[in-house]
Length: 215
Image (cartoon, rainbow, N blue to C red; front, side):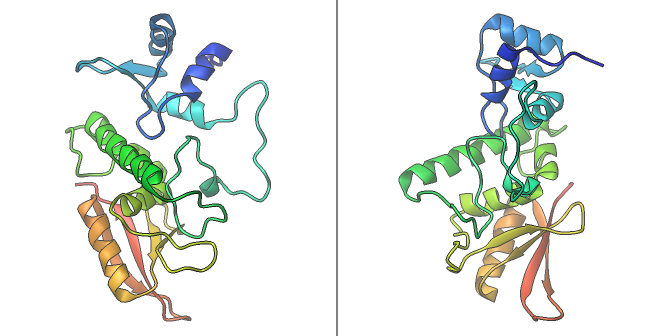
């Protein structure tokens, strides 16, 4: 079993850019992470270093030897490993809106497109990548927020909501009306997701099932 990264290496991993996993560190630190299979050097200039899937798993795991406990009231879907977190709708603390948030969302979406280009075998940016398939709720929410859709607020204000489903490769997207739901479907399909409209049998509420397109 491989040794855990050193404290200095762990800091470099933890400071990686959200979504893209781009690293900043000294040449020696970056070379050590590459040697351990936790990072790779991009072949195109400026030859930045990025986390590998193994590196992402390290970043998402509790740090050793002093792991930070996750509050019992939170679920894995509520915890984000980066500074930026896409809004899934209904968050108790949604944070500030305005130009700063818009810049964060735009930067995160552009970073995700670059991650698609780097990690999809054919370099396609119009199809979800492996990171999105393991972070379905956040990935779908980012696509919606980046396109200008508003998430539902904690006070019950109308907007989209993205939730996990029993299906391992699909999320449920709800909206206050059929027009907004259709607009969310169009946005997700443009972002490389496939969607289907469904009706909840008991409440008759309409919702989307969305999953990442593979081709």
